[in-house]
Length: 306
Length: 203
Image (cartoon, rainbow over all chains, first blue to last red; front, side, top):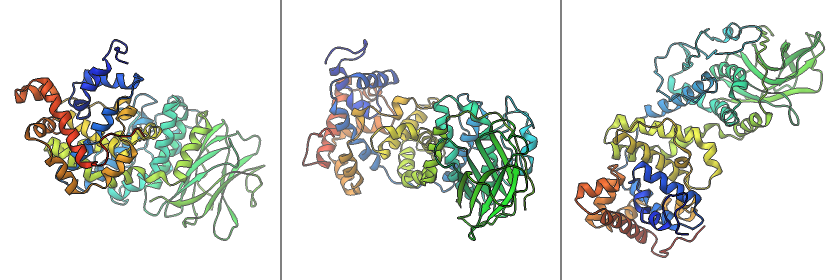
């Protein structure tokens, strides 16, 4: 095929530009024209792979220089901020990421909630350290007495991938805003997960389509849990959270009701802090159950966050 | 034992379970350290090339950070494509560094076409393995095959961020000659590195 595609370049013209293309030596319009041709041309253009394959060798020919160690912390912290920015942007295009200052103010979880229902989330989030803020603020969560920012950043990055990948899928589906409340609850969990010795738990339902959630257990045994897709409770019904340690005996953590279907947020304390403990959720006819009523709504096993 | 019980009715979450579940599964499968791991593996390569192009430690750090963030944000889209992550990452670092030296305002999001190179531009897996095993000696030999004018054209473009037209102007050489020097130089390097096959087999 030698005819121009869409009024663009011919195959011969494109072949002629293969070397400067792989070297990045075309102006932006030319780069786009070549890309456009390659994307739509039925003819093979092996010259691009042939010439392009040498480019990594050029890169390898430069003197090897180690980046400063602090760059990794900056990167992971910026990734965390990037995530927070996406959540804080109400589904709008993610703003460009600026490197968060190491001296960021103490914990401030994004609390932007365009259409809050019931208790204002800011107030409800207070126990785990959220500071109410009238604006969608993106601030790196940071504990004033926590581990170093580097340690924190690495730990948080491990947990963040959950939310990032989740947020990614949501973004792709254009549904970020509908999940925002859950993401905000998750940001509170991230705060806990960033501490030394914390555990994270993924809760899933048996089979397809049940409630799922995410929890973090701090080194001191506090648990922060966010669940989604929970059916509403009726009458005296409550959801009860349980922890099952090595002895296999379910110990009640507390209960909560879900008035509007969807997301719920729960905190409790006194948990054992070894990896391997299991968190479970059951639906009970009333508060105060000492033995779980089956079936289990959702459960997961704790793993080290770091 | 159960104290701070805090029901928090929030807005209804109607997001498809599948999206959520798939992300949870990826974490469960141990993918959570991806960015950390990617950085550890390629930080030296990325920083070295960024520093070579920008000749500025601060700028190079910004470029590397920006490039890894871009890769991280777009990893999922990239996964669909087949090709060397190293090459992909390298191309992002290179483009960002060139942008930086050209004093262009870096785009906040790379266009798709840049993130997922056309199939023709993806390095065959076979080559990627060969390239991974290249030692410094191979690289030196390959660079040594370049004539002075070929090396000048290639280095001005790849490390200097000059377009082919700018290389032509700078070296006072016709544009067609510049293109030839680039192409012949790259082909010469390739012959040194893959002495047994002078044509790439479509993979």
